[in-house]
Image (cartoon, rainbow, N blue to C red; front, side, top):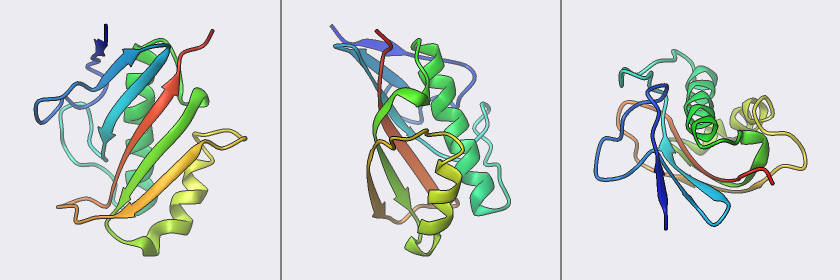
Length: 124
């Protein structure tokens, strides 16, 4: 049975979804953006927005008993593919090698530049 994960260290869901769900030894992390736990947008630069987004994912992963070090796949949604290289540099701060699989998609985001979701293994 899927088990929902929730933490006050990341923004509350803005709709009918959980921050994360554990099932079959894996944590499925819902998309996070550059928002603090109160839902206020943070980050003046693109890199700042990416860091906050990864910090939110990390908070939910930790609430599930794992960390981003165990990420097997993540999806990135960018307002502009012009930010692709900077994304790669910041991601190295949060994701160790070997890097997880990734999909990057340009999308229309309103008022922020990045959203990221992830699939993270639970440690054995």
